[in-house]
Length: 284
Image 1: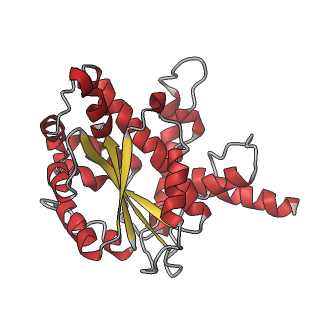
Image 2: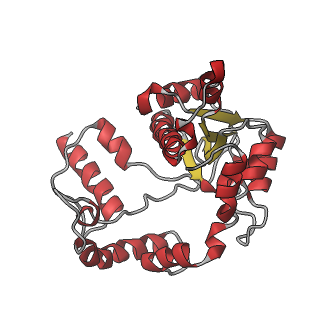
Image 3: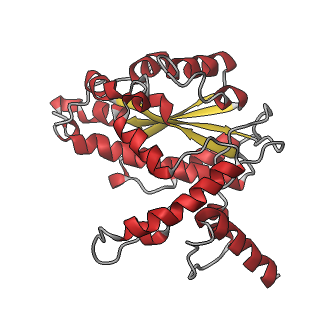
């Protein structure tokens, strides 16, 4: 039993970091194993979710930490086939990458995670409240962070139920049109989507490797040099992942440069600030 556990631990660490960057001092339990087993799922069965799955996942999300217990997020579960297809289509408007994210239509549920200050704005406006604090950038940042924290709890819950997920940042590509399609109120926007469903066993996705802990873990101050030594190590694991998954050859650093230097990567997100301001966020 102990040997099986050690083998599983070594297998997961190998997939997550590659042979040259596996951390040696890792404590182990079922929850750590589940977290290290995470992988994005990009092919789904059309099967309906088990009864109560959405409610269970949202309960897990609501059990996450949130700033000052302000509850500044909401989630829309899109189960209507036509609406789901329309949301997917809207997210692709103007895209230069083709159809993009076809799994939105494959899976039975698409969760839209919303940074939602609408409720609190309504409450705060009673008796001529100024909502002064909500006019600052930190208020939007706080709501967006809380949304992300809650959604990650949802991922963990979904995977514990045998379901698969993949985040969809493309919901910000055409944020104005997505908000209109969903009838979102002011002071809210979709931070990202999340495909949710039963993974298709005929196409099991691989665990994507991450940077060495030596590049991201700092003690008592930021080390500006360590990452330069670790990136070449990571490139080996990154290349192997791409080869194993029949992806075109590309280095991780090339991917970083593309995402930073080529406006094609934005796919409309350069308009996000204007949309947020139109939706009531002053971003002072």
